[in-house]
Structure formats: structure tokens, C-alpha cells
Length: 193
Image (cartoon, rainbow, N blue to C red; front, top):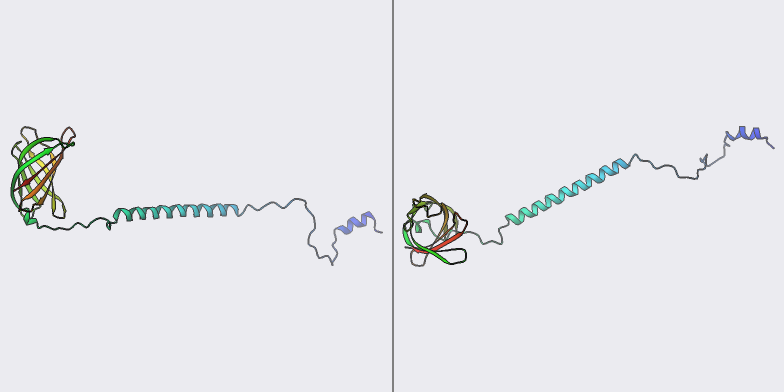
């Protein structure tokens, strides 16, 4: 039998016919490699950011589609000629406040220039006058912005909106809407001939 010294000396030498590459047996698993953890985190971060950006773009596109979608609204068409509005018109207007209570009746004179883009007006009852400028056209209605040019007694509003549309008997329906200096919304309606 071999001596202890011979066994130790022969322990370093492996037999030629040994098929196992295991040199030592450990009771604990080897430590995990951390070299790929950073790549995984970066990849997950990129995927998360990309998903958020895609959601924002899709949400923005959906919001724009809803905002710009005119399919549910009736198309605005011009059903009357601007020449129908050209000329001098006058009539009695009835003014009501927000609750619909009568406030005043006043005489209005409106002059629409050729092309119906501009005009002028005088509120003879209140001694006020101003200019009109076309701001919108909706079907057979023309909407004008009124800007005051004269108000010697300070009884009128500085700005208002006048909507005109034809009547069945060659006149014009008129609706003035404005907000007073105190913040009260006033609406005046009448017929101009």
C-alpha cells in the first residue's frame, strides 16, 4: 500500500482515464453573473419609454381626430346671396335681459355695403352709432361684429354681435347680442325692412 506521502504526491496527478472534469465539489452554487443585469434594465426602460410615447401619440391622434371630425356636424353652406343683405334697413328692436324680461325698445338703422362684408349702424333712440364687419357666415345667416364709434350719452355697449337672416317677405331678421359694462348679457331681436 502507498504511504501517505505517496498519496499526497500522487493526488496532484490525474489518471489518464478519468472522464470527469470536476476537480472540487462545492456545497453552494456559484455566484450569479451581474454583467447582463444593466442591459436588461436599459432594455426594459427603453421599452417602457417607447410604450409611453406610443400611448401619448395615439392619444393625441385620437384627440385631434375627434376635434377635427366634422362628420357629425351639418356642413355650413351659403344659401343666400350677399346682395340680399345690401342696402339700408330700419326697424324696432326689443331688448330683454338674461331672464327674458323686457328692458327697452329702440330704433335701429343698419346699412350693409356692397359685397356684404362691411356696414354701419345707428341706434337712433340712444344716439349711438358704430361700424359692422362680417365675422361669420352660417347658411343664410350673416354675423357681424359691431364696434361703437359714437356714444355721446354713454348709454350703449362698446361691442356687440349682429346676426342677420332673410325673412319670408324681403326683410331681415336681426338679433343683437352684447354684454353690458356691468356684465349683464342683453339680447335684442326685431325685423328690419
